[in-house]
Image 1: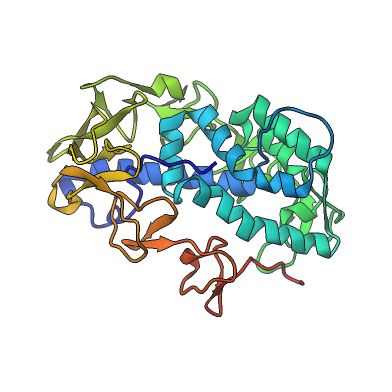
Image 2 (image 1 turned 180 degrees about the horizontal axis):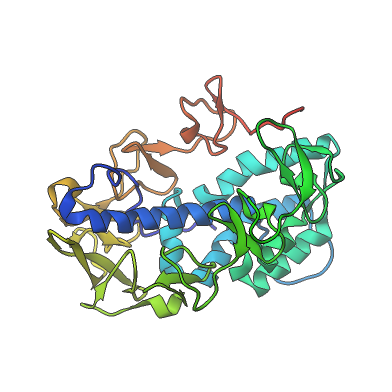
Length: 386
């Protein structure tokens, strides 16, 4: 199932160094949303390895083909079940929708890499662990990132055969409770996962119950923990007024109530946090309801417009926040800005870019679902030594 998302402010452009003084607070809020999306994307793809789908519960091994075919649904369903439709839409719209965020990246990136490692005998697929991964996702969707229960269960789907100290290219090649430590050059070596306070660059480097934050293995911020960024808490929590709080305690703004994209509160499901006024100290925001296609709208997050539309004719640099709901740019090469592009496209350097599958022509890595463009062709990442 590929879901359509209500796209809000999906580009990070013009927020560093060029933000107009009256709305710098607004820009910081947008940068926070961008960081939140990036954190979730990386954690879900890398930290949790590959997410299996959630069909009706049954027992026995799950074939590799079934595991992969259910990936996108499970990723989207788990995130929405944990964070709610509004927050998950915000996350996924930055990466080209649900399919762009998870399905394409996995099929063109992680999956071929696992195939290479399997071919050289350093990784095996475990169908029983794949089934356990499904069960964990179904039982605890909020634990799919940050080394939570579902993340750990899903990490065991691809089992490494390399012993501690052995050469490796990816984490999955290493045994249980190990990761692949790569410093200056590949290959790296399999090492024990690190404990609290030790250096890291992704969650897999840390022991169970810890996540990689600020390049250090730490316990995940839970309810009541202090925080400074909207996305600085565990999945299912948001930072509001300096504390990690459940999403439903942050999405509380009613029609006409004030909201804040940087510190919270945010608006209830179905409402948008839109620009209300701009003063020398920054922008203020207010919760407003959705509007119909072609209707007047205001720049906000998520967009007030229906699925597949955005608030057009706005211009952040001119402090023009009033617009009209219009279809999102749907052709490759079309100009785009804070509102992004139609599903299946990403807004990169103010231009809509179609994600290419492996084997398609490319000019830059950002055009490739795998993130790798070699000799003008999108290809899967390579394992060193392959």
